Image (cartoon, rainbow, N blue to C red):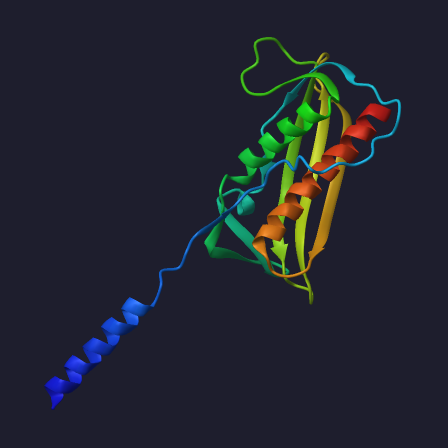
Length: 199
């Protein structure tokens, strides 16, 4: 009788293993949205000279492939089967380059190894990049700092733009979250650019 029970248990366990499907991995991108457009003030020119686009700095809690979710004031959780396809610092650096190719704020942009010194340097910091679930709704939260430096006479700050924004999402959907992060980054790059050109 014991033997029959053991064999039955093994058969049930094997059947359960066979019917369960492995969890699928999903990857998300922060990338430039070419369909996005926003009005620019008339009469804005470009800044004469070359601007070095520095690699974006992302706070360590958000810098890996893991997607962070804020669940309490000082608590983060990370998704297990959902990740960034490209680390945020690399994705946002590329998004910046794509933005300044589409909108010529500077006469020329450079990134990486410099042959000749640039006239300006843009440094970007990302202090928060999270799916915020603390309220009743769900929000995409980002906290950016854009700093533009004049490099011709040392390193002098010309303009700093700080944005700490949360965009409410219809539901807890990571594709919608990635889209919101990409759009918010572009919107704040535009706000920073207009302010810099108007100075």
